[in-house]
Amino acid sequence: MQLIRGLINLNHQADECVATIGNFDGVHIGHRAIVKRVIERAKKSNHQSCVILFEPHPKEVFMGDNCPARITNFSEKYAQLKALGVDKLLLLKFNQSLRQMKAVEFIQKVLIEQLRISHLVVGDDFQFGYQRQGNYQLLRNEGKGHYTVEPTPSIFVQEPENKNKKLRASSTLVRKAFSENRLDFVETLLERRYSMTGKVGYGRQLGRQIGFPTANIALNRRKPAIDGVYLVKGSWQKNDKQCESWGVANCGSRPTVDGSSYKLEVHLLGVSSQLYGIELAIEFVAFLRPEKKFNGVQALTEQIKQDVKQAEELITQIK
Image (cartoon, rainbow, N blue to C red; front, side, top):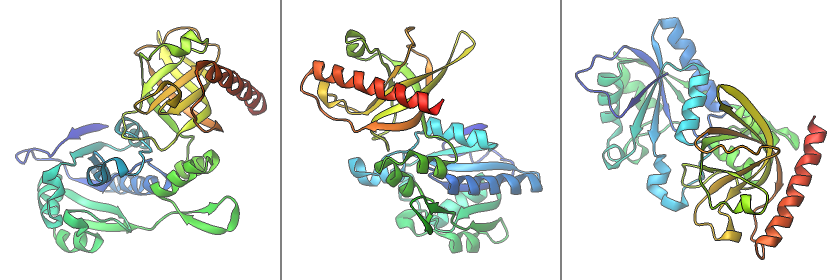
């Protein structure tokens, strides 16, 4: 998948494409329906498929630390869209200039002049541009003679605990499912098990000192959508060999050791080799307990022993 950062040079004659625009946080079932429709239309018209993303998420710019938690960072989002078969990804930096760009100007400069959109697919609630003045009707009116546009209906899923209730798939619903520790429902909404990916870096080595070495992964997001202690499954490549292991992970701010930022710390069961610098993918399988502050390292160590025991019991059930 071709990645284009920033606006395309106006002098560059881009190939016509079928596109969609959005934040696609989580790349959930509703997002996937839109992207699949884009790819389908692109193949029929012999054009490239394109997804237009904003980074950082506009709500992170508007709301700062009060913004919604991130389900996927950019790298994870890129991997999901690539797996779906998107031809190119246009990444627009959401800065002051783009924030103040009027919807009509965005349509003319980006969609018509630069991307040469032939067809646009958007969600039925899509809004964009300065003060969110752009919508489906404006896209349709301004696109006459340049491109066609179609809305896609919302996707509804069954509420697991109430068969008579349907819920609209959204990033907000995914975050709510996380807050209720309903990983099975998250998997339904994402059409896959939730995962995080990142390079293993150096931590404070506390885990190794207490007998539970951890792989430390920077989250690359203002705050994660998930927090607590989980049974996980890790996978990575080392020396051209694909490896995987069950593990116990803590995602949070590590209050017992006065952590100052969100981190993902993973203890891989039975793995003794160091993984520094290796790209590690972590799938979240089951919730074990909330993160909490313990009265010292010894109390934390005893709790980790219980976490590992609980994880091993769950692994036996899963197998």
